Image 1 (spheres, helix red, strand yellow):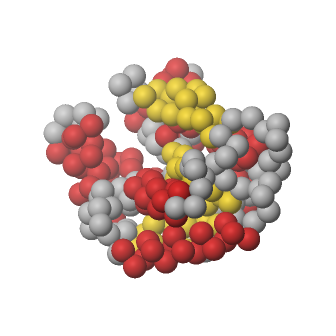
Image 2 (cartoon, rainbow, N blue to C red):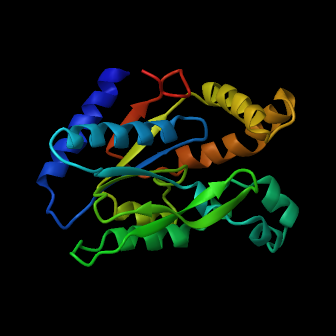
Length: 234
């Protein structure tokens, strides 16, 4: 697994050397729930920053999660079938894809001396809702690793955002392995009261979404095989 990540780090660092100084390098990391895409994006940003830091001050890379683009509970309650919308939270239709596309377009604008810090939303698990403008993206952050379930989905507006990326990556994982990871995650996070409840949620929501993610995937530049450790520890 280390060799797989090292290859990707070298690839992205080489590509970064070749882009204009007023441009960003943007990579979208997608995968089904429980695939390990979040950890991969974080590790990639950290490794690129380590290389950059050997010769420069500051940070050049960052990882941006899609959790902040969940629709709020209030928005879900206003849908035609609020109960179904709440139960399916995490499905593509429960995300604000248009808002994400706006951020991607803004990040694609050429950088100048007057470029301002942009902001992405985060997700507050305590209140179970997004927090607007909570993740700063300074103009100096020129290598962006986005991570989320639907970043290579062949449906609008996700497909329009995908066209603005330099690369699309997909973290591939066996559905059974993902299920076991999700059960542990849901119990630990308090999303489910016990393992039986967590497995029900995984089967009836997370992996239903996972099937759409796999079946409606765009062509990608990299397919990364997920390791067995959900924390991607090396």
